[in-house]
Length: 389
Image (cartoon, rainbow, N blue to C red):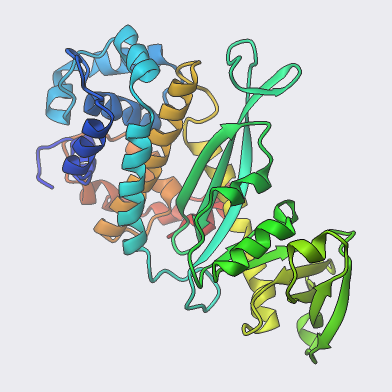
C-alpha cells in the first residue's frame, strides 16, 4: 500500500478483483452496461457504508464533491442518482452474495485460531435471526403482518472472529426454525441455538449428519431419565442426565437419547435447562458454550447500529438484498484488513476513523497509528469489546 494513494483505494486493494469479476460474469452483471459497471456500483455502495450515507441523493452529492479524486480511488463510471438506482434495482443481488462468500472464506482462514472464551477443538457456530422493519406501503413484497412489512436476516456466526458464514434473507413471516431445512451441517461442528429452534425432527437431522447442537429446553419438555451423572454443584451445575423423549410425536421425531443439563448462573441466580447430543464434553463447558451464543445477538445489534441496513436506498427486493449483501461484504472486508495489518483497534474504532479519512493520501497504517485510539472510550464500550477481534 503506497504513499500518495487514497485510503479508500488502499482498502479496496484487499479485494480479490478476479473473484469479483467471476461473480459478475456468472450472472451477466455487466451485460449491455455502458456507464456504471458492477464494480463501480460495489465501490459506491461500500463508500456509502463506510461513510454512513443515508440516501441515494446523499451518496451522489458526496461522490460529486469528490469527483477529481474518484478515478484514483478506483471509481471509473459516472455516478448519478438514476444510474445507481437502476443498478440496485436490476443488477442481480446474487453477484454480491457470492462475492460475500469469497470474502468470508478468506476471513475464516485468518481467524481460524482466534479464542472465543471456550477451549474447544470443534468449530462452534451461533445461529439466530433478526427482523428489520419496513414500511409495507413502500415495500409491498415484504409482507409480515396486516399493516407491517419486514425482512428477516438469518445468520450463522462462526464464533472464532464473529464471521457470518451463512446468511439467508427472507420475508418476515418465515419462522426461524425453517432455516434448519436449508442449512448444510458440518460434521463435528457445534450449533448453538435458542429454544426457538427446538424442533426434534430437525435436531435429529443434525444428529444424523454427525453435527452437535446445544439449545435450551422449552417449558413443556417431556422426558424420561435414563442416566444421571454426579456434578459439582459449587460450579452452578444441578443435573447432568441422559434422557429419552416421552411425547407421542417428539419420540418419533427424535428416537435416540439426548443429554439434559440443568445449570444455575451464579451471578444472576437464573436457572437454565440445556439439551445437546454431545455426551463427551464436560457439562460445564456446554453451559459456557451456550453463553457464547450472546455473540450473535451483539452482532445483530452492532451491524444495525454501525452499518446502513435499516434505511434502504431502494424499495425493490433486489435493491434491499443488494444493500444487505454489500453491507456484509464491507463488514468482512474491514475484518480482513484488520488482520492483514495486525491492528488491535476494535472494529467500531476502525470504522469511525475510516469514515473521515477515506480520501486522505496517507499510508493506511499511519492513519491508525497517529493516535492512541484505545484511550477514547464511550458508553458503548462494554458491548463492543466482543468485537475486538
